[in-house]
Length: 128
Image (cartoon, rainbow, N blue to C red; front, side, top):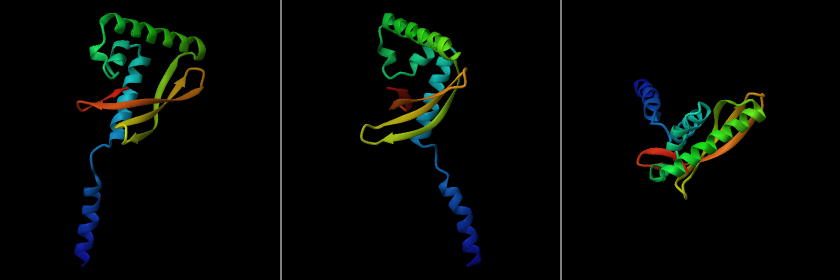
């Protein structure tokens, strides 16, 4: 009986170790895309959007200009975005998506929580 107890004690943690959840994967992807935005890698941020690969080149360029303007605005208002943190994620099984809540930490020590809707496409998570 004692051996059975120890076997269960070892087996339970091993069985409980499953892979990352969709919420974890979507959260890491969303944070990664926003890290690209903070580093002014606008093309990589755009690649994280669902359907970005089918956008016309001129529209893609316009979006990147918009991202650049947004970051300039954040620099003027808040001394820029210094860090992106994952707050939480909530899975929507009806829409088959995950809402990721990120915290943008600004240079003036203020924080803002945003929601990033994420969808899975061909095994990777993209911003909707």
